[in-house]
Amino acid sequence: MSHLGNEPKTEMSDLSDQELVALFHQGNQEVIDQFLQRYQTRVYRLAFGILRNPQDAEEVIQEVFLRIFRKLHTFKGESSFSSWLYRVAINTTFMKIREKKGTEVMSLEEVERLLDQESAKAGATDWARRPDDELLSEEAIGVITDAMEKLPDEFKIVVTLRDIDGLSTEEVGKLLELSPAAVKSRLHRARLFLRKRLEEFYRQLYEGE
Amino acid sequence: MAEIGCDQFSNCLIDFVDGDLDQVQHALVKDHLEKCPLCEALMESYVKTIFILQKVNQVAPPKDMAIRLRQYLQSKLPSSL
Ligand SMILES: [Zn+2]
Picture: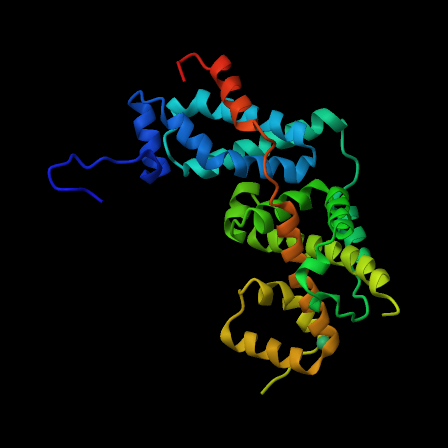
């Protein structure tokens, strides 16, 4: 909205990522705060979704933004700022995992088999029709949190980007260099695995009612 | 009209839930769901799982994280923030 006689003032928050990058190239440092405001929570959730530990997630986000702002002057915009940021965030998060765990041994095939066994269709229970505030008890939250932790990283990352952060299947595929079909397959298995865990919990809880 | 069975249903569950089916396929799935309580329960609990997953994981960053992040960057980046 501009008023007559007034210089129309553009708020930083109205600018696109691309415009912010251009300002940064012109030497404007304020854009850094704008980028932080825009993305810090999302990057935090992404890192936390995989690492499941607030301190590790915070270290990752510091590392991520440091790398981003150190390299922003060379950013040419071949991809969008956000996909560049996500890629850096994913790489940094996986570096953190490696640093913490050493080498992972389970192969993807093994994992897929395990998940398939785990997720075999259980009998019908209609727990899903119960009211949300009843379903979201502290215990249930514990169950899904534990289940998320058990999920192998390749699945965790897909669930986090797709279901928690809300990126599209195509976007997730591009970021992880997977075909849309592979993204869907991992996502589906992960959801079935989590569903199974919840179902076991609720079935026991509501047994005999 | 053709019908689908439980196996076909579970194969397209994810596309159904994520809205990736065309009209004809969508109608076939809906038709199956009306006739099959097992698949209906699976679908409902699948959707609810996604909902719970989202709810539980909308974590807020720790208090003061933003301040610590800014301080960290300030100490590491050459230019003045
Ligand atoms: Zn069925």
